[in-house]
Image 1: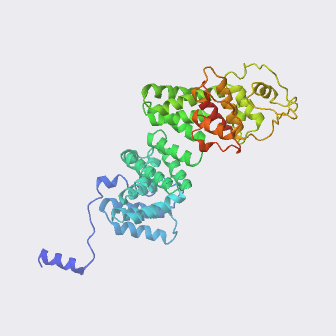
Image 2: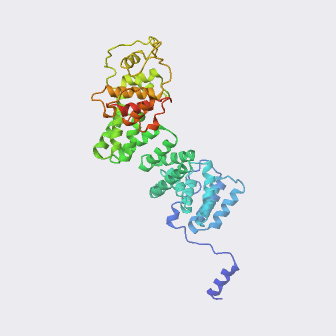
Image 3: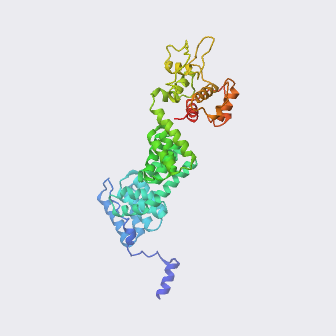
Amino acid sequence: MSAVVLGLLVACGGGPAPVTTAPVSNEERRFLVTPLEGFSDGVDSGTERILEDGFRQLVAHQDVAAARSAAESLLRRDSDLAPALVLAGQADLVDDAVASAQRQAEQAVAEYPEYVAGLLLLARSAERSGDIVTAYATYEQVAARRVVAGERAGELKERALEIQGHRVAEALARQRVDVARAEYDRLSGWAPDEERTLELGFEIARAEDDFEGQLATTRSLVERRPDDPLWRERLGELEMRGGDAMKALEMFEGLREQYPAEPRYVDALDRATFVWRLRNLPAKVAETAAKPELTRGDFAVLLYWLAPGVRAGGAAHPKIATDILDHPQRQEIIRVVNLGLLNLDGSVREFRPDESLQRVEALRALLLALRRSQPSPACLNGVGSLVAWETVCNLSAACGVLASQLECLPSAPLSGQEALDWLRRSLTY
């Protein structure tokens, strides 16, 4: 019988497929180690012999059937025997059944997370199946014990970081902040100082309303990108909000010098100067400014400490309020009353320091303070009485105290932050 006819008979199912006698390629062999390597539990000598023989047949002759048979014989006795699972997975890997190989490896390392043979199998099968993140993470885990793992981790790192970064960004886009945080923690464990990691860290901190996290990541990014105006501006805003006020001044001074035609940097520098002044005043000033709703006494404190000329200003006809003699804001109230910025109830000569402040009262006081300045602003030229609320609202908008007349809301309450904004816009520091 000729060799051709014999070949046809075999191909048509005349007998079992021949066993390949060539060894596993050198490239793939680097990822296949004896199933006992790194296995922390002992096995009996008979089990060891079956495992080693099945592994030897696999790597020396690509005898997948022999390796599977050895693994199955052991798994029939103990379905959770990790070295047998690894040997079965190694046979799958050589047979290009990479998904099955990855499942076997995952089962083995779930119970033995430091198991070298299982980790190598998991990393290689994940890589071949396209699961780059798992492959990189697993190679990293075993890199100190196997040179090939360190090499592959280095080659896969850039792609793994890119994929993991996309996962974080996608979770944030879906507003799944919890998922984004978990994915980010993994990313930051791999590359904490990478710029992309820091950018995503900022976004997560912002989504979590984590001020300290935003500040820390932005500071790190500005160290790496000292010429990036976006991150310098963000850092300046954060430093103003609750960081280092002097650093905020430095940020915006630099931006204003570099971009003199950009008006927002001029405004930001003005705000930073204001915040710096505020933080160098007594603690009670900042505490007052943080209140969600101001009383008349609270606003007297802000006027006294932040409006130029109020602390040093004199009064021709001093007035006494009968209800502030023991009040903690007594000093500030006396000054603003005697300068005519806030009025007493004429009938009983009471200031009512704990009464909620109306916005029109605050605006009137700021306009009066402006009128005291030298020179008086042109917006107040020829203005007489400031009694009518309509007049106060119109002039406040004209003088730039209000961004819009719609902001007036004369009888509404005023927050400390709003009062600071009005003070900053109306007065020169």
